[in-house]
Image (cartoon, rainbow, N blue to C red; front, side, top):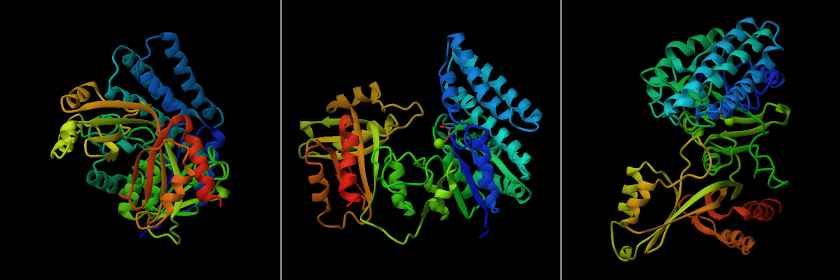
Amino acid sequence: MSSFNVAKFGGTSVANFEAMSRCAAIIENNPNTKLVVSSACSGVTNLLVELANGVQDQVRRSELLTQLAQIHDSVLEQLEDATQAASDVYEILDTVTSLAEAASIQASKKLTDHLVACGELMSTHLLTQLMKERGINAARFDIRDILRTDSNFGRAEPELEQIKALAKQSLVPLCQDFVVVTQGFIGSDAEGNTTTLGRGGSDYSAALIAEAVEASGLEIWTDVPGIYTTDPRIAQKASPIAEISFSEASEMANFGAKILHPSTLIPALRHDIPVFVGSSKEPEKGGTWIRHQVESSPLFRALALRCNQTMVTLRSAKMFHAYGFLAKVFEILAKHKISVDLITTSEISVSLTLDQTDTSGGAPQLPAEARAELEELCSVEVEHNLCLVALIGNNMSGSKGYAKQVFSTLEDFNLRMICYGASPHNLCFLVNESVAKQAIQKLHTELFEK
Ligand code: ASP
Ligand code: MG
């Protein structure tokens, strides 16, 4: 395999000139880095999302546009020769202005994707120029030329075969001669409309691109020095993990450890590409390697927390000794494209949590039409303000006695929807939002600090 490294930089890593310079130093440090995938500058996507949602108030709209200009200007001002980059960035800002006006009249998902994609389109102009000025033979590439997706705006699905074929034609050859800088998060459908992979999707893009070019390594540079046993902002004694398996890391990402977009590891795993996660602010601190084979597989690896959970409980006396109830429930959920996350059942009831499926953030909602159809079948109760706590580890379903340790540590907490046994890599449950951090702290002390 070639030693072809892909480096991805998140929004905070490319927040301003200094941050971008640190990225350039990281790129210079690894001569195998042929491809750089960048997010939008920190804060930019949020501003663009607000505009895309439709800002009628003209004053507010121009405030947002000014903020966008300022973020990019601050980098342009520090470049040696900003002429070309400035004209490229300002052309995109003009597009943003007109799309924002259109969105204020009528917002749509398609328009939103076109608008929010502008963040990555701008940051890559800046990063490319900055790299050139440091003497790196950099070239900017529009990833929409190869990152083909379906037309599911806001959460598009990649078309893997096409991406691979297109990458072979145009991207791989370019990487022979240049350090190519391209956009995360965005793609285009068969008609050439701009699409996005969902918020935080640039990690996923980077992995898809790494797979397409058959990279030998993928570095994800962010603002934390790797993966920790839990979020150090919640448990002060959280410790860094040097090496973790794909399955454990996928569980962590799925369960809300906000370090990686949950889909990121799928292409990496498919192609067996080792993934490194580190902080571009403190690269000397090292980070976490995610690989297929790891040296140690401890019973307890990490604790993840995901808030904004929506729990739906369905009850039907008819379910008693009946068959087909769950099938009907899932038929309705499928019809409304509602993805279910956790599920627990008893004879006459089933509780489930809804997957986060859109870019808006907040708790997922049970759509009214779906609720009405479910109510024809059973009673429906929806609860919010819940957080999911996940304990991640190895061979958990085959180990004795640890459930006692977990549950006795949490004897003062009201645990809901305990899911245990289906995966060897996790045990998870819901707790009320108000006590979630406390639950993590207690568990961390008991399981990871002794
Ligand atoms: N810029 C996009 C976002 O903020 C994608 C990313 O950074 O991963 O969601
Ligand atoms: Mg991100």
